[in-house]
Image (tube, rainbow, N blue to C red):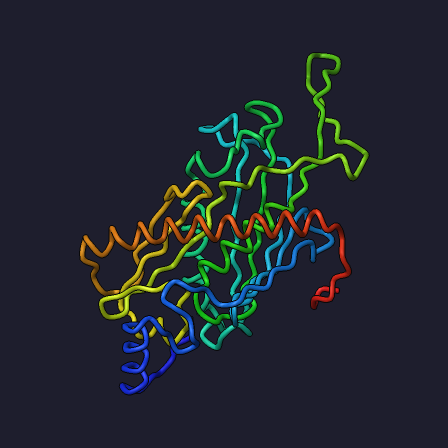
Length: 290
């Protein structure tokens, strides 16, 4: 993430605002910035979304392919995440500058989706021990304006919600060798249940208080924080400590409790908006992809 240079006076101003529960942009400590979401932007993907959280901009495309299941999980499909940090997002991403951040986001997303309570990967199994669906989730960070973990997770969940998986039938041929037949109807598809797919909630500690959805300036004023993966049922699927500073055990417990509550609300609002968009039907897209 881009490094912001702040004077001591600017840091003091941010600290006092957090202390008084009135941040520089008028939000309270637990308020998010405006979110703009579009789905179905990439025509050649099985599912896609573009989400903008203030100045952070993320595009996600999901590609569905048949492959062999993992030997240790023969009855399940899988998700694979790939993150690309555009050099235009921030000068620090030029060259190989964004690789470390991309790898960190990939690893944490993979960890968040490993819990059996978040997504049922058995739905992706086609032929036990032989064939399964693999969902390749490609994430492109177009602009970096703080709080990338939350932005990426919301965009991924939205893209998975819209992902269409083709219907497939298993036919037995001569020699008892099964043959897979894809439906010729492009509308004969199924979708994953994404109700409990986790959203990531970032909490940064500034002074004696913590806040959600930090701006780049607020991130510079914080030495520690946590990223928490919260499912739709308020369960915590994964936790990652960020920053070089330490956290008191009592502060950590309080932050996890707050993250669980905030994550449940964000999940509920996101699912409601996705359902509303689906019921409204296809509308004319005015985004940059059209």
